[in-house]
Image (cartoon, rainbow, N blue to C red; front, side, top):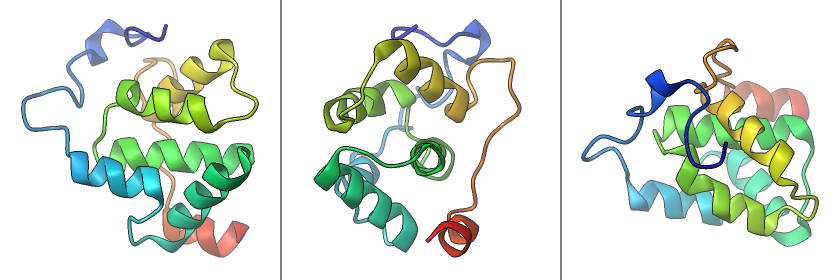
Length: 119
């Protein structure tokens, strides 16, 4: 599950030439995207190793839908920073929040609404 999308039809998604933007990735990874709630969640995760499920889901949704980053390239960083990393949960959740399972509706979180509702 960590090597390919659950639904093979999504294999090319976010993996075309020119899709990967390393500047976007570094901004997301370091909590410097310019979106306050995204940045706060990533910085909190980096500092403490834990954030709640909604914040985790929002970070992955934002990275994959708004920044158009491939979940496979996000996975190693998140695995390193999550204190409660468990592969059997980590990879299915990354795929689910990225919309590549083929069995779940797209989960696109409004980072502005999440900031207002959750922060």
